[in-house]
Image 1 (cartoon, one colour):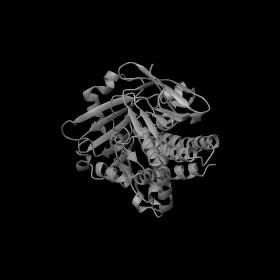
Image 2 (cartoon, rainbow, N blue to C red):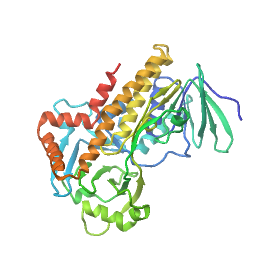
Image 3 (cartoon, rainbow, N blue to C red):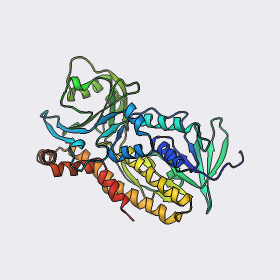
Image 4 (cartoon, helix red, strand yellow):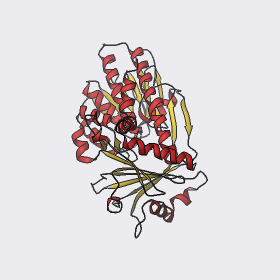
Length: 410
């Protein structure tokens, strides 16, 4: 085992969008970082691609917005549709809000593009060390430091030390498990199927926008457009499956084709780019701080994707934590009270807003009882039509209320 290295830095585990943003935010605050990632290169996955207005403001603060606008799509409007009748139920326009946010749109900027942009900016920074193909296997801490034992690409082990360790390593977080932090919540019985296609739905359904929610009592659908890897345009369709359906049954080409044809019938088959089948959880860590070990993003909370809230909540974690670590690092605040407040603020955002709203979104789209389904769709129709309700709906859906109330928590 090599000799212990470093010490005056923050160690971040996980080079996804949250770990990358946190590293970049800390470097802008003159705090050295070590970013550790188990994969040999950032994962190319467009599962998360929506940046809501408060998140866009954070990207602007970091100096990343110009890249996001260049690589992504601006989406000021989102639709709710009834697949059964074909009716457009509700249209919500962020730009039409009476008290518009500074950035009145959702930016469809895929997570892998965010990571690539940030890592490129960090690669020549001598105080930002990046270690790929490096896997955490143990952690320990005392009153002054935290130590991380890792396996290196060649199979050998090493120990790195820092003042703080932040787990940004996803829903199966090794850091969270090693810190013995409970992940409270549940797993949905059905899995979700994600289908990516380059077919341009605008030519087929002109009433669509870049962000669409189809209600259906048997098989609802999220349909979002992103720019795609080379700007060609990529649509992502997400829908539920039945618990008893097998992988082979769900991933069969004819089954995938039938799923898309159900929502948007067309001549000929769809061109499928990628498909993925995954379990969906609603969970929040019991605490986001344990001594010098901290959690952010999916390591701290996971939710279903209806509403595109997961990555946003993680970026809000990262910016909140970067501000607090800056105060602690430069002696402007005591660590424990401030980090306890970080947990209170970000858990409130998750429990009171993201978890509650994402569960409600899913239940609304998939409601089976005819009377209750009618009530829920009528509610969306009314909220879309009345300005005060329209704006309140957007503030909840786009995490504007979530961020405001969380930041006000003492």
